[in-house]
Amino acid sequence: MFDFLFNPSGRISRKGYALGFVPAYLILVILPSLLLPQQGLIQVYTTVIGLFFFWPALIAVPFKRFHDLNLTGWWHFGIAVLVGILSGYGTLPIIVEAMNDPDGIAAMSEGKAGWEATAAMFGQLSEKPDRLFAAIAATAIPYIEMIILMLLPGQRQENRFGQDPLVSGMGFAD
Image (cartoon, rainbow, N blue to C red):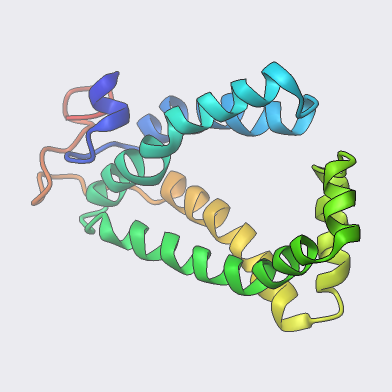
């Protein structure tokens, strides 16, 4: 399991990606942040779990999926950079403006977070369509990539990144 989550070399099948990584990531990282209040131990929990999944989610597992498609994992890195640029263009000016505005800081310190803060940010973005498009694209692109990696079949024979992960019968990794 350690090799599966932390080693970016080798290949992983759609099954290994879809069943071995995505559900765990969504359940342990995304779901608690949406359902549980962001206070005390819950915030610590989501932070620790998020840090644990940082390397596997950003590098190791997606790189293996790209390798199974006979593509370099650096494509994933390029997509991550694009998402960062779009996110920064779309939302960074609003965050900086809120930090410089005493009322914005007061709203954040009063616990305005989660869905309420997101709705306020998108409300401000609606006045600037180009920034709204950038923010929506930055939100959607990682999920689109995840779906594509779950749908595209890997190369059926050995490639420059290793053996076909389906040869062993498990479908997970080399």
